[in-house]
Amino acid sequence: MTPGACPPGLVPELVDVARGLATAAGDIARRHFRQKVAVDTKADDSPVTIADREIEAFIREGLARQRPGDGIIGEEYGIERSEAELVWVIDPIDGTRAFITGRPSFGTLIACLAGDTPVLGVIYQPIVGDLWVGATGQPTTHNGTAVTTRACPKLAQARIGTTSPATMNDGEKAAFTKLSAGALDTIYGGDCYNYGLVASGFLDVAVDCSMQIYDYAALVPVVEGAGGRMVQWSGAPLGRSGGPRVLAVGDPALLAEALRLVAG
Image (cartoon, rainbow, N blue to C red; front, side):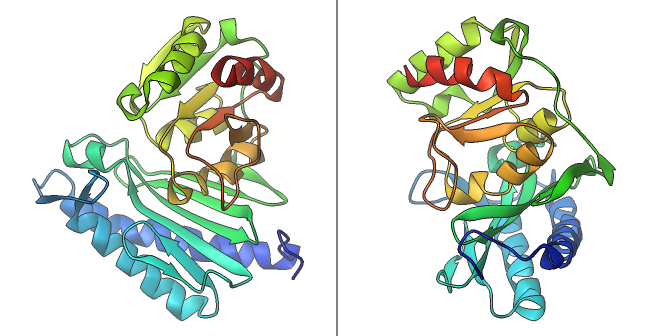
């Protein structure tokens, strides 16, 4: 397989695997949601719950059965076979803080990398039932229906979202403040949900910091398959070595203006 390439005939099979595992794992999330589960603190001070661990274990077991030769990168249980031609990337609950406070704005993320390139991404919100799927050569879908981003070439017309300025250092906050000041409106909270909303044309810009590969890999195909762009703040592509600062725009014409403000 050519690095960064995925045979087109294989993509539907990969989509079926990711979609099936994400939606099946929703049963675990629903069982623990709003149950006041115990919360542990990881070495990076981020929270983790039994739901995070059970969901990732469930997805890993499914991949071991259905795609036994592929690699895996997971937030909770680390890396297996990272040199494989196809590597799956799992964030069992993106938005654990939302999950533990009873807010249905978290999601399960599953991506597949071919070399350095995300070729498949799934965002699943199991409480509301929102499912976004993006894949190479296919239009992004939301609950099975193709979606597109919104035409919004100017920041002054844009609605933007970020998870929390608390994840930003002083320089990042200053850059985000410039971006927000030029926008029509800014919303806070959302985690992966914001990127699904960019793909569906309800948000025009999503921006976050402190993002690891399991936070962003699934989002890139979803946003770009709907007509948007998603890159690092430097403008470089988001691959296996990307992050931690990411920017998604629904209208590619808005990208240069947004990058000038966050990277300047």
